[in-house]
Image 1 (cartoon, rainbow, N blue to C red):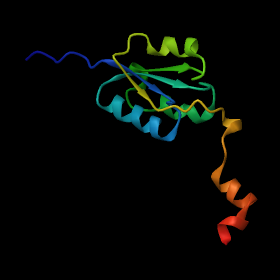
Image 2 (tube, rainbow, N blue to C red):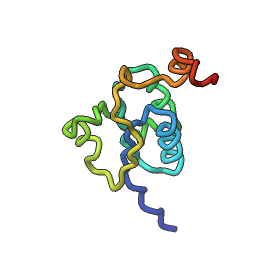
Image 3 (cartoon, one colour):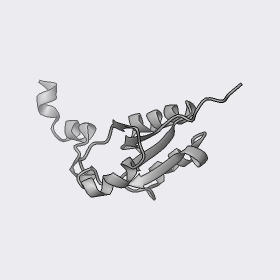
Image 4 (cartoon, helix red, strand yellow):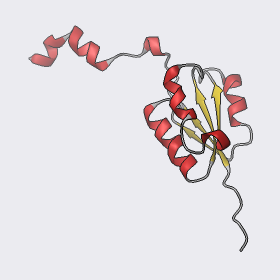
Length: 110
């Protein structure tokens, strides 16, 4: 019985995020090779990616700023598909919804 060909390599942008990390896990579990982009591969929150089943053989993690096309290009090389999950908003510019409610509860309470 002939073995089936390996599944293609795909890229998941924002691989360290909640939704994207679950997608990386699913893709690896189904036998895909995955290139995942993250803002900082050394950030401890991204360590979970390296612990996923199949990561050692089929996961490559790339540092990529989504606002810099040149930084993203290496992660796309050799990929047959891209799951673009990342947001290009720097963390310091993100609004924490919980903090904004605590800062201005007046309108929410009327």
